[in-house]
Image (cartoon, rainbow, N blue to C red; front, side):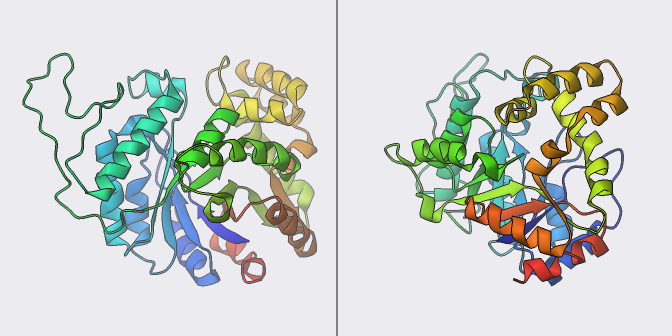
Length: 345
């Protein structure tokens, strides 16, 4: 089992101590460091800034939002970071949700699967650098021939030769159709709120994608990285309670009430009644009450918390379910170093 450090996205200001966290991750033997974005800090700049301290760990976006950049602009950022890091970049992409896509980026959220397929296809053409890049799809036409076009657009190759034409592209996906698409066109799956209990269901979704004509990978060379709190502690109760307000936020308040992908994930796990109550309370402003409704089992379905022996046992469960990497967060370097004996197994 490999480990990745998830730096996430920033709150009101840049977090402190991140450099020390990244140093610790490299020292301990973590495989990768990831950064995310929502509607504040971006995903690429922190990786370039803090990644400059490193020489071995891979540097990934988890995730960069499709609507934040055109596919050509994302390919430029990816090939740049890949050169600067000596071929250590992982490009993790995700569609986000309608509140962000339409409310922040001012774009339509419609047809997310079609947009993802087209977006990744353009990036692959840029990285291959085999010919001037064109795309006939409806979402990212190259050259642009739509309303207001001058007709002077010219297909171009990237000036900079990409370091790796096969730079890995991983997709953040939660629903069955999106996971199947990920298995078909990507090199890895960034799974949020994964639970080994439903590994059989995830395998069905993945196998559908692997079986499609032209699928890029097979299960043998496809990476599954799951976000998972891994906490070695003698006070599991305190850690579970600490996580519950975060779960209430994502289940009850992250995304539109009518379309919250995180809530749908937990409904599939069998927590439909709890999701309804958490959502009702959270959107009424009763956030503490919403957190109190979160069952311990819901937290432990997607997290590993306990003493070292308990954590070791659970790591084997996750690995047996097919997860190759766990993406963990940490409050400080000391918490991260408590994972060192597990990372070095």
